[in-house]
Amino acid sequence: RHQWQGVIEEYRPLLGLAESTRAVTLGEGGTPLIAAEALSQRVGAEVYVKYEGMNPTGSFKDRGMTMAITQARAHGAKAVICASTGNTSASAAAYATKAGMACAVLVPAGKIAVGKMSQAIAHGAQLLEVDGNFDDCLTLCRKLSEAYPVHLVNSVNPDRIEGQKTAAFEVVDALGRAPDFHLLPVGNAGNITAYWKGYREYREAGLAETAPQMWGFQAAGAAPLVLGHPVDDPDTVATAIRIGNPASWTQAEAARDESGGLIDAVTDEQILAAHRLLSTTEGIFVEPGSAASIAGLLKQADAGRVPAGATLVCTVTGHGLKDPQWALRTADGSDLTPTRVPVDAVSAARELGLEEG
Ligand code: F0G
Image 1 (cartoon, helix red, strand yellow):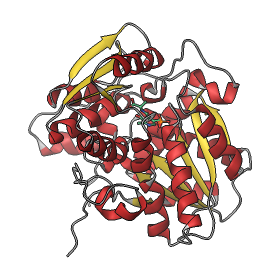
Image 2 (cartoon, helix red, strand yellow):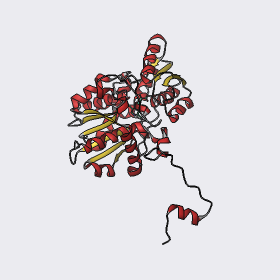
Image 3 (cartoon, protein in one colour):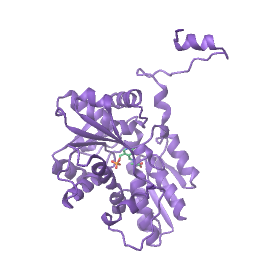
Image 4 (cartoon, protein in one colour):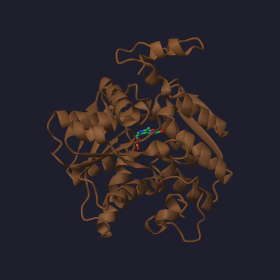
């Protein structure tokens, strides 16, 4: 019987970590690659969903954080800091706690989901709400990490990318080959950078013959890579990817261009429709930002750009429980409230529309 050891021990030879370095791990990675039958039928191709909400803190950030915190500890850091739209802070707080380090997080005031905020606080992080957006928070964190003894664990830290590239390894290991297309949400652009690095390295090592086209999707109100210039006041219901000036801008463009892929925008309506489709047809619950990859898949399919029979993997980056309020609304935005019944089988059956038989 094999217990998954976390991404560092599972892929250590490919991560450039000193042999003596002991991993700080919560058992991250090894997430399900789910065959998505309803989506496959809808787009006429073979679609898989890489369910990153199944990581220990509920998002893909744990893959990068195990590496970043492991290296920070190896270098003697006592405290780490990050800017976050929520998931990075939840992950940093958990892994810093595991390593016995202090953790400070700067988040945009009023713009992070309550589940994520709770996680950072639960794990004892010092949390500051900044009167600004994510990009402002990252600028502040960079300044603080330069002037004070705090180690920056945003994805501008290359250790984060090293850890996150393991998701591409897992996809190839599970499929037995690289997919034709890999779709994912794009915010600060660390993850698309990491996946592309992972696919390239597997191909160079002879572990995959090909690498996929990388298809990234930004929220339309926060789509600097699509517009070709930073967005001063990014806005979207997908708070995870509410970012106007991605730190890994040039790397994201390189992933797009070297793979022959694309970076496109999807509207909040498309994101919420994809969020609903995933939960009602595939049984997969994600946060809105994660549904950008699915919204992108549907948009490209409707435009006739998904070749029949192709293999596509969509990463869904964070768990639905992070930001559950969206499930409690109808497509037109009104609240869904459950029907209340007495302790009585007949009334319950009537409300459920059950017929005797
Ligand atoms: N999906 C989710 C759920 C995220 O939390 C993020 C980024 C992304 C997608 C985009 O990934 O930044 O690598 O392009 N969240 C960061 C955070 C910014 O602070 O948690 P990216």
